[in-house]
Image 1 (spheres, rainbow over the protein chains, first blue to last red):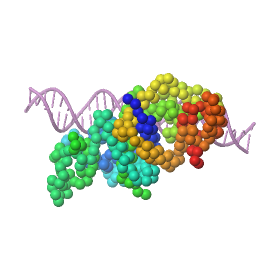
Image 2 (tube, protein in one colour):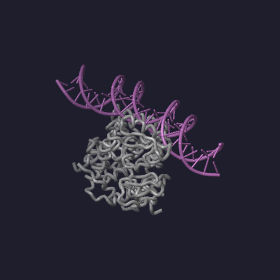
Image 3 (cartoon, chains in turn green, orange, purple, blue):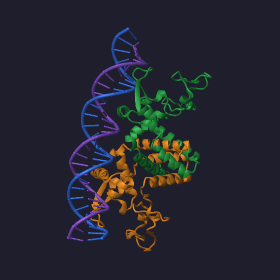
Image 4 (cartoon, each protein chain N blue to C red):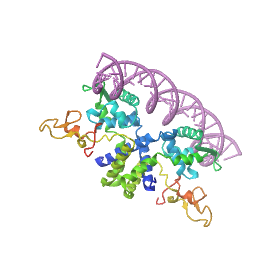
Length: 192
Length: 192
DNA sequence: CTTCATGATTGCTACTCGAAATCAAATCTT
DNA sequence: AAGATTTGATTTCGAGTAGCAATCATGAAG
């Protein structure tokens, strides 16, 4: 199977872009893995903020993730608390400092460059990147980690007027509006 | 300064894509840094295949690069030889095994996914990625490392019919056709 | 010819990752 | 219900890496 030179160049460019991003990640005393964990935690719903989910998300091992989290906790960005739903499980949350740190995510610098370089019309680029990522993940046997509301277990508007109007059919849990937009380990595309 | 959600998503996608690529890079017993070095060496012209250039290319330190190269040499992918032009300098080359290894670059897998996901029309995506990278590099105070023939020191067709028809005005060195397409540390865009 | 800049390497230290072992809780089997 | 298996999290350990600083050699500049 052959690869087009264009695709190869794109892969190279992505690679280099990422390397630059990493260079910026030294800031704040956090390393790349720690930044990624922080990023993930800020965007994942409460069912997905566990060490195991984290490990699966950026296919690493639980041991490694555990140490990364220990660092983040030590730095005061993350707290761990026992899960009520599963006695073995740990729920992770960002502290105030953690939320604050995410606002200074070095990835934002890259995003700014993207904005500046493209002048707005990004829809098609995004479309392709998403497609590519989806394929790459599928190929590697990973899970998509999509947004909650796109999941086949998502039941919208079960409790109108409530603070948690939606519902997860898999976990049987009420969901707030914010929850429904977060990414979730359990997510399975509605169009199975 | 604000960032568009689209750009932010694109940055995220790139980040995740890269992480997947890294997962594949475990293969062959090479780590990401070593793959990048191999990649660079396979695409750089002979003036640019030095430890210093490498360090600048993926902004690292010379010490680190020196160690990476030691690993690669030990594994039989790279050889070092003294430069004739500068007694302090080392010229790096890929061995046969090195050339072979580059053919199995895990980045190729990503490129395939890009191909599969986009069905060919990549010009505009490429355009934007290039722009973005250029800006990001400039912002970080780095150098472009562009292709030789796009350089303002490039003198085309000085020796017609020769094996090295072109010429570098900066280093005052003859250049083959292949040289002219390689990336170069010294490259400065013609449109200064 | 002395001084300074540049290229490469090597100690050294700190850190990071991944594999395997361990322990606890949940789930499955029968 | 009891035992076996799976799953979640952590710890320990070893290999490898990165970055800093020091060192040494060569080249360039005054």
